[in-house]
Length: 113
Length: 113
View 1 (tube, chains in turn yellow, brown):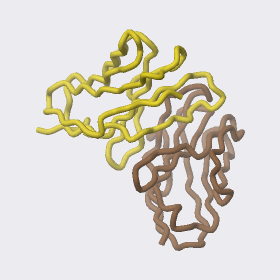
View 2 (cartoon, rainbow over the protein chains, first blue to last red):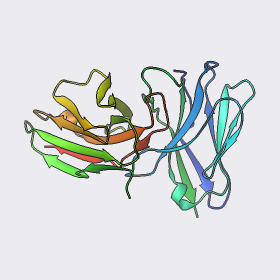
View 3 (cartoon, chains in turn brown, orange):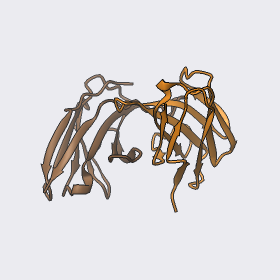
View 4 (cartoon, helix red, strand yellow):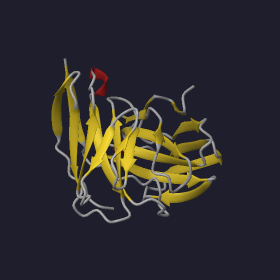
């Protein structure tokens, strides 16, 4: 699995967009980018994933650069409840060790009033 | 209804004891996992089961024995508990072994004294 690099921490004002970057310069052609988050004292929560096209769901948007070496998770209108550690994970599906997610240190996002 | 539920939420015990953590999912998934989050917050897979069959065993000491009586349950039994076993243990499930979209429980905080 490709290694990912994320800033250790970020701040965001409530109501503003939170843009969380992730570098994955060694990503392979068949590897997807997954984002999870972990709110304090809770289990990780799946947010979104994508291969090469930009993706959007009810939680967030995922923007993947054309060369796929980096991506950005966007929370369009951050709320205090979005304060969490956000993990960017690169993974090829269909492997016989599916579900073996490699969680790095992630980005600790603090949403401030 | 909680999708992935673990019991107990907190477990405090003495060194040398044997304890179990139970996990149940009502999502109809056929793959379940145990992850461990240590004091430095690193989250790492321990085991995965698919249709009650062990798929991943990440060189976990054999004092840890997962048991899957059916697809909806994956329990974790730990023998001869050691101080280093203190951590938060998360159960998770997914629809299929190649699906990287995992649903996590809220965790069991184990403290070994």
